[in-house]
Length: 83
Image 1 (tube, rainbow, N blue to C red):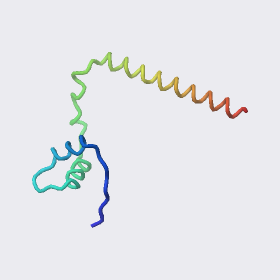
Image 2 (image 1 turned 135 degrees about the vertical axis):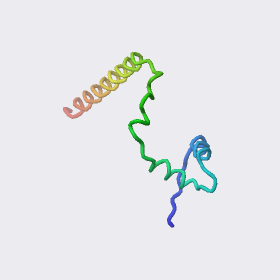
Image 3 (image 1 turned 90 degrees about the vertical axis):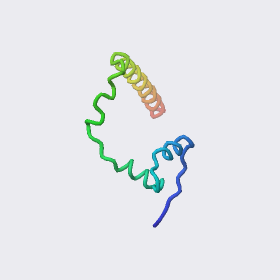
Image 4 (image 1 turned 90 degrees about the horizontal axis):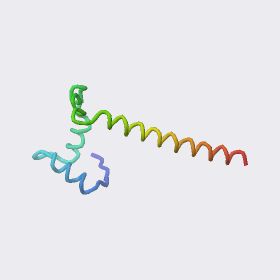
């Protein structure tokens, strides 16, 4: 069997180690997690404790920031291409 070496943080290692079942390899853990089928039902209620208005406000702030950043880069590229 071919193998690959990967580098992960100590925190990630500790999470994987905590998920590892007896006699299960780290590859087994990663495969189990990666291949696990999720249903929409698994996510129902995930945001129930989050303030929807605060979430919307933050999303608008992020969109505005990203949009402004994009526009500045676009303007710089237009300026460069003219010269």
